[in-house]
Image (cartoon, rainbow, N blue to C red; front, side, top):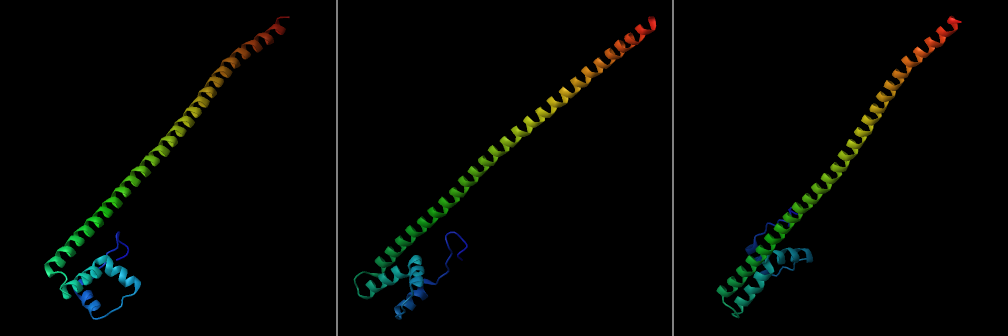
Amino acid sequence: NPMTSPATINLDTERACQWLKNGAQPTDTARAILSYKGVMLKRHLQIGVEKKAITQEVADAKFNAWLTEKENKIAAKKEEKRNSLKSDAKKALAAEMEVNAKRIAEIEKKKEEIEAAKRAELEAAKAQAEETPAQAETSEETSEEPKAE
């Protein structure tokens, strides 16, 4: 399954070793897959056993050591990927929080401006209301003065 990270490969290693023993010439892609899964190493060690250069126990021990090392590398890679995803998520969250803080500050600033404008309007209306009665009184006084003459 290439969609997982790292890609998941289901392979019967014994059957693949038998396939190579029968003289198969794998393509570059097939060779890479077989090498990744350890089939090529297993076949190499099996040739050493057939030539009596090493014993089967030594070959199995070398293969198992390689296999555990490979599994540890894969586990480390998965952990690194998981940690990088977590750190990326934390960075994205921090960036989003910063953007939200800026938005909130802008909204608060606009609210304060609106409230200040409303207060200014109210004060202007009060001042105008105070001026209007004063003007009415002065106009009454001026209108009364001509009557007095």
